[in-house]
Image 1 (tube, rainbow, N blue to C red):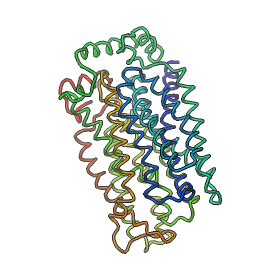
Image 2: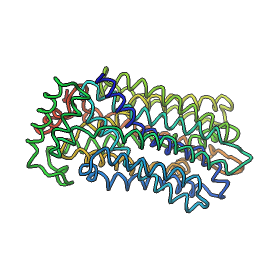
Image 3: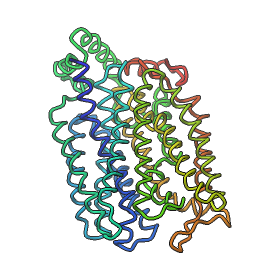
Image 4: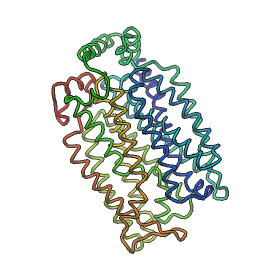
Length: 472
């Protein structure tokens, strides 16, 4: 019974990830239509896309401390309200200026949910199930991305440039599911105990772990809170020497999660497939749906293996595959004119391979690890720092993609679409491959193996000055 309750709570909360994925992915299929509807160039498209990311930065920046004060559940409910209003406003937006403003507004909810949801799930999960349960957040992100692609495909109509509006409206449905579902979910027991609401915390622990295990978990949580009584919960606490590795891990893993270029594929996959030779926006969206399916299937693989094989094995397997697939993708686009029809299909296969390796490794592992490595006193603040980092890096990658494509295009390899010189993405893919290689080297020293280790033991390990790669 208690296992059922844990999974129900995790799935409901992880709907925040579905909304994150939906609002991240829906823009990709809408771009070709609102770009023509409003008469925008690529620079303006980058601005619309980046507005959501700036909002996510604001959400992650200002809500970490609030999450530690008001609780995980309240903040997730607030994000659900923003998602609901934002979905309706996006579809209604009468001008490009309003669309930019509402993407900024929605971004706040994405930023908040991106750290509050995995943090909440980590704190309600037993240690032996924490990896797979927190990874549900990434799984829901991939379901959200796929749902957004299917929504784009359902409403896409090359004879009606306003067809992008219902693509956004459909986001109201999962927003209401999160809002209603979370209203009936318990607060994090670790947060309750940290706020001296011990009886409420013990009651939640009993529901999710059983009465026998509850007492041991309660004593462990209480002991760690007593040890940290002298610790403050502000940003200065994160700067203390004993937490230096946790901060490096939280920021570093999110840097590499973004700078291997995944969101260029999520946001701009229809554009990339148009570059590869697909005819028309609808056929390019079909190819993007394939990206969503691969992302979903291999995230399920990661959820299954993360508590069996562990974090480090998945990390190195995935990053090696990302490095190789990006190298080959660059070669494919370099010889685009010679490969012809075969190049079109080879490029989509390599994109699928790249997404598959990302989905089993650094995609879910980034969110999982930042929810594990920070101590209770600053876990909300630390997780928001990791989330803030991901959105800053995401914004940089997204806003610079077309610029990097143009800057690294070798003369004579340019790709033209409707008379427009799009450059060639080969150099950009090689740049991301170099980053993937750096991620492998960095990961050897800094990716911890947290499989089966309680959050309290991880905190104790940092206090003793342990090195990340030796954590077991």
